[in-house]
Image (cartoon, rainbow, N blue to C red; front, side):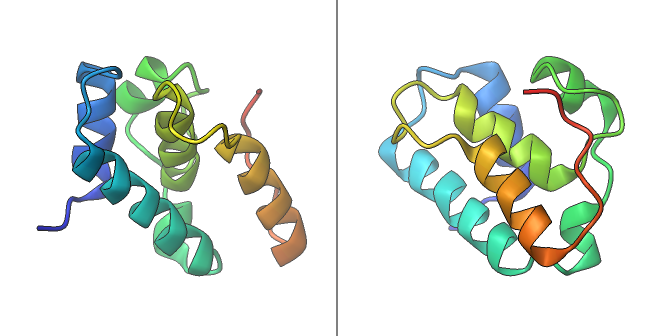
Length: 102
């Protein structure tokens, strides 16, 4: 079963330490899909303020940024700094910078 981006973010917000391996893998799969489709507008849509607030992001952050912050919030997921990787990917794609403050 696949999980939606918003469902994954809600699970992380609810219980950062209690995610199953399957849930973590689904989050990583969502991340891989988001990075592969960076130029698609869906990944750059603005996320609801409640998700931004819960993950200490500025209101108006992109969904892909919220996903990166959610993955970074899970302890010991793999030591990857997803927010930094996102910034690099955005720069490589020539898109406008993501308004996060990491």
